Length: 302
Image (cartoon, rainbow, N blue to C red; front, side):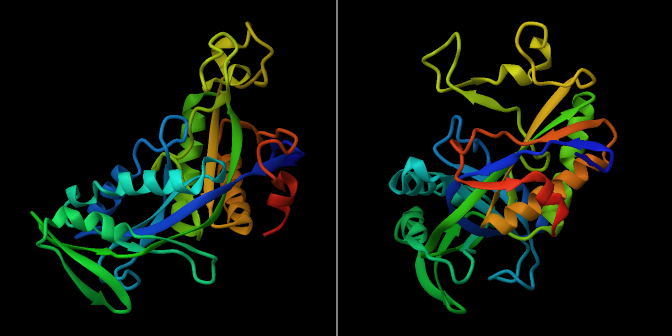
């Protein structure tokens, strides 16, 4: 089908279940909060890391727990990896928090969700070497930890909830059009969409892969050769003749409605960017994710 004069394939986006820990990192300034949230989210694609970390959006000082600017981060991993493995990876990642100047960390799990506790503050408090203290911040139990730029606060208990992912494949005239469109989609989602987080912020989008290998069979993931323009004359390509680049655009969200909204905003942004040729979603007959979003329905309803 045509959507705003761009080909939108009539396929299902398969969405998988993930464990998700949603936190808000606050700092002295918004710039510091965004920089350190991006840093804390680094090395965060499940291909090579034990968990994923995606930036969701800003939190104003009026809405943050400590009255300072903040940024929401969604730490996540597919549920098939196991809850214990996710908890360990999350504790290991967040243990670097006291290295980040002025940054405090609070739980931001949605209300009404079924939750599993994880004692992140109790784990990180050992940084304080006995000089840390416990106190209340409103109704939150927090650890006050002295670091070189002053005291920071870490909530004692965080929560793990159920989340979901979704992904688009976008064919562009060239790499520049793909990256420009991904940046526009990410700007819109970061600013306007609740409960949806972005890989590789502020760009958004990654170069995708396939499970396993053809020539290197002992590798867990390798290039997805039908989507590599440099191989279009060597393999059975999936790239249209007038396209010379592909970008994969994954999202993580609090649930299916949030993912649907995020995909709609992303499709709108890609379709409005000159150079976009075709938009689709990877579909594996239900083998990848048990939840499905039919792309024409995504753009046809809000």
